Length: 220
Length: 220
Image (cartoon, each protein chain N blue to C red):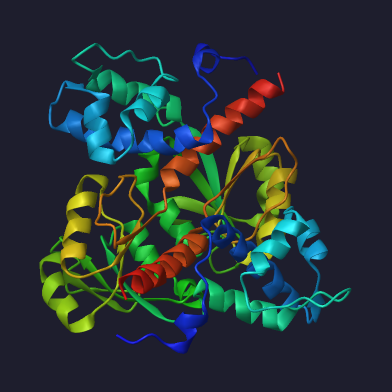
């Protein structure tokens, strides 16, 4: 595997910055649609409630330079944000566990705009194996190692029932996958060189419930 | 509105604690299924890679007491975690934007196990308005204020296209909803007494891409 020019130039970004960049991207994409040519960090700050010094710092990781009094060129900022976030390149992925969430992800062509190219699903249920979901094939999870030897996909999207989370992640990793996007509420253990991203929608629900109660108490 | 005994006893939890509690819950639910009676924080620590002092601290917010050398009773811990996280009570919600993700959430009965009771969907597209998704009705977004006067639902799940995120959130809030579960990559502005929870799946994707590159560089 050789390093491309792109990967040499691209910076390793701090996680809080990565979390904010998609907010900026959504906003400047909208400006671009509205044919706005330039945007200042002050403007972004007002719109998104992020301090403009923070925005300037976050954007300093990118290959963009703002002009005094004019700000950033919107089109370059969109392109540079997409590039830095990895959204402008294709990343192949498989969905493991084609229940309702897994199926939704396979059918959601919106993810392609964020560089995610789902190529197949895997499951244990005979009634879905061999079927197509969102135009993509669903295979037997037992066939993953052999399939992977041919396809070399890096990202496994984990949408299995929680009590199969660790075992399934282990199988994906043993097959050579190097990133697990974990949608289960289980905290997966993995070797250090495997990337794990947890999208814990249930934790977010708990935060909503708890904060609603807080608001309720505050306003009593 | 009167405060129930439950809401008096329940603590306002720090957000990092709320993020960890679902991990503990998944694990002790599994132990319960396997008919294990007691679990120590050391055991949870080993399984989930969280320091046992942290676990003890997190669990101190709950109405459970561990016994020396025996640990926590699994069944009580499951019940108390579910209660603290709000998963054992019903919270009504609507899905606004019945695209692939919105539809998946309406069809995912798994959310009920986490206290979320989706009762309807709202959309702007004539072809889905009046239809049923996952057995639930889809209404015209224009009918939201009138519908809400009758149903008093607190939680809006926002799965609209990103450029409609703020305007749609504004409408939900104007209709009297007090919590927005935001699945769009847009950073929504709302009055202080409205709870906003952002589930930024695209930010997580960017983190995966960035970390994969880091691993790649590390291993070169």
